[in-house]
Image (cartoon, rainbow, N blue to C red; front, side, top):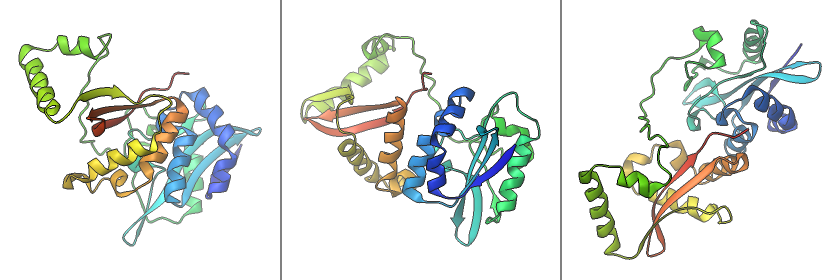
Length: 257
């Protein structure tokens, strides 16, 4: 078993194919995909601390971390942590129970950080085998838990109660007073960049959004959306008024393997 700590972007690119194979075989989440991590790194160039385990030239585990500077403190955190819903290691099963400890020891030996803060870890994450390293900070986001029980959006609206349907109709009429309104999904062949730039502009018009790391950057959202597109997971939904985007959402669906 060979343990390696990747600290530069060129090496990160070199192991793309091996990482992809491991990700596919372990059923890793979107946020552990190599193209997601690489898209993030290409934009921020954060110091990498990605521990890799190789067995007979085969990549069998990845612990993707980086060093983020917060004021004068160097914080060890997940690669792409601010932009990822769920963070974790990739680990080929059956794995040596001590393997994650060996990866962590390699990270410690590489050094270059003062504090550790690992966020966004789900209860079934592989990294929970190292629970004493993982923050159990609760997330504040709320999942709407809208189940896919309807064939289309129109059927979903019809299933709502009368008051909600009336509110939707009232809102639609108010928007239509200023031009024709269209609700649609961005097509596969439509350019992403102008749409992302427009959504960023709209996001920045509200002061409460300005602290978001995605909003602070002009290019990060496009880079990550491109990574999702590469994975076949990107879905962008828009509301247009007289042909102008007035609202939208950038979404990811689970990868189909």
